[in-house]
Image (tube, rainbow, N blue to C red; front, top):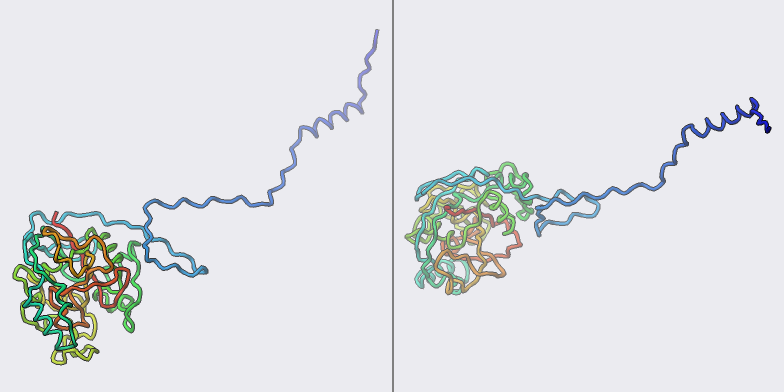
Amino acid sequence: MKVIKAPNTMTICLLLALLLAACGPTAPKEAPTTAVAIPSPTPTPGTVLPADSPIPPTDTPIPPTPTFTPVPPTSTPAAPSLGDTWTRPADGMTMVYVPATEFEMGSDDDEVDHALQLCNEYINCERWWFEREQPVHTVTLDGFWIDQTEVTNAQYRECVKAGNCQEPIVCDPPEPAYQDPSKADHPVVCVSWDDVGRYCAWVGARLPTEAEWEYAACGPEKKRYPWGQAFDGTRLNYCDANCARRYGDKMVNDGYAEAAPVGSYPTGASWCGALDMAGNVWEWTADWYADDYYGHSPPHNPTGPPSGEYRVLRGGSWDDVTYSLRCAYRYGFYPDSVWRLAGFRCAKGSE
C-alpha cells in the first residue's frame, strides 16, 4: 500500500499566504497622460447672423449671435376706418389706419416744373431729377396701417437688447444720438435697409411700399406737402436758420439744428394722422429704386422692381429744403449703407 504523507505546517502556511495574495485588491491603474477631447456643442437651429455683422479682432471674444425671436402677433382692430389708431404691443408704437383706395401717384408736368423752380432757388438743378416722379399713374392699394412717427432710439434699443437687431453704427459725428440718453425719443438713424427690415419683422410689421408711403403722405387730394400745397416752415424740421448749409432758410427757426424728437410738429400731420412725413429724417421704404419704374408699375399694390442697386428713401430730412420735402420726391440709396439722415417707420396690412 502506498502511503501519502500529509503536508507539514510550514507548507500549509506558505500555501495560505500565496492564496491570500492572489485574492487581495489589485493595484490602481495609472491615469492617462493625454486629456480626452470634449465635443463642441451643436449650433442651435434658427440662429441668424446678419450679413453686415462686423467681424471682431481675433483677440476679442466673439459676442453671441443675435437669434431672431418675433414678438407674438396680436390682432389689429376689426373693420378699421380713417382716424383709427392702434398701439403696437411689441414697442408701444401708435399706428394710424390708411383705408383702401385708388389714387393718382406721381407728378404731372406742372408739378415737375414747379419742383425745378423751387430747386433753382437754392442750387443749379436739372429737370430730369424730378422727371423720375413721372408719369402720373393710377394705383389701387389695400387698406394698411402705418407708424404715426419714425421709430425712435429707445424703441430700437429694445430690439437690440432682445438680440434681434444690431446696434447702429456711429455714423453721425459729432452727435452719436443712439448713445445719448437725452435723445431716446429722436428717430434712430445710421441703420441699413436690412437693419430696419429686421426691426419691422420683429414687431410683426414690415416696411411700407413706396406707393403706401406716398399715399399716407399726400392723401386722396394729392397734396404737395403733408399739410397742403404751400410750404410752411413751422410745420416740420428742415434746413432752417439752425442749419449749417448756405441755403438754409434764415427766416424760420424750427428749434433744432439737426433731428428733433419724433412728433414735434403736430400741425404738420398728414391727412391720415402720420407725423414727420416731411423732414426730420429720410425714411426707408420696401422698394428697389428705378428711374423709369412709374412707366410700367403694376396698378394694384405695386412693390417696386424685382431687383436693383438702390432702395427708395422718402420724405427729406432736417438737412433738406422745399423741393426735396415734397410728398412725391424720390431718392435712391445703397441698401447696405447707413446715413445719419436716414431712419424709418413700419407698416402692416389690415388683415
